[in-house]
Length: 209
Ligand code: AMP
Image (cartoon, rainbow, N blue to C red; front, side):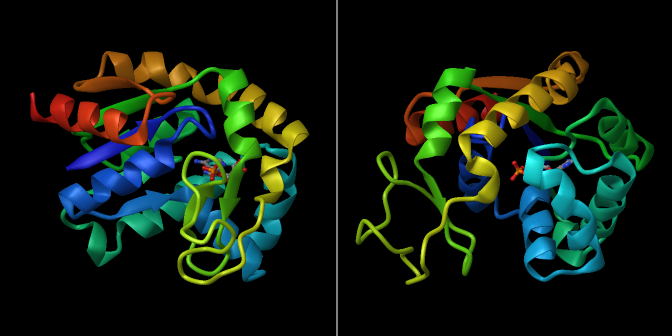
């Protein structure tokens, strides 16, 4: 299975992708996570990407296409994968086609801007294991630390003014992909403001059809 998740930042793509990845036993490839790791490790890619992510802008297409091409060539992707955060532009979607990748499903997670701003204000991430929490909706077991023991932090790009910019970038550059994929094979649209479990069940049911 090769599946793409589309939706605004904070709509719940990552959470749903992780759940589905466990059910289908295929990896989730999150380009955002790859970029954050590179920035943390101060690799040449990280140094190049930091200036873009800091303001909520997209990293240039040619850089992202190179990253995804390299990642999808790894052995763990041989049996399929879920893409979370790629493609984010029409140019990136066309690059996937040029690579000959045939998608089994494109899943859109919907949520409006006000809901997202509120949700991202409560989001915390663990820099040790990468887990994501929401302080109200999905708190860690002890209410403070990651379940792995790590110190939870607010993602730099979850600051409210950066979130607004990321949403503007989403509407301008990524939203056109919804029309692009609506006419390409299996397109599934799910409400991202409902309970994680409910949205997850709807995705599974739509995939089984
Ligand atoms: P995310 O965690 O998916 O919200 O990604 C965090 C940041 O990484 C984004 O705001 C972009 O700066 C960058 N990024 C992730 N995926 C892509 C992509 N496919 N194209 C361009 N930039 C990306």
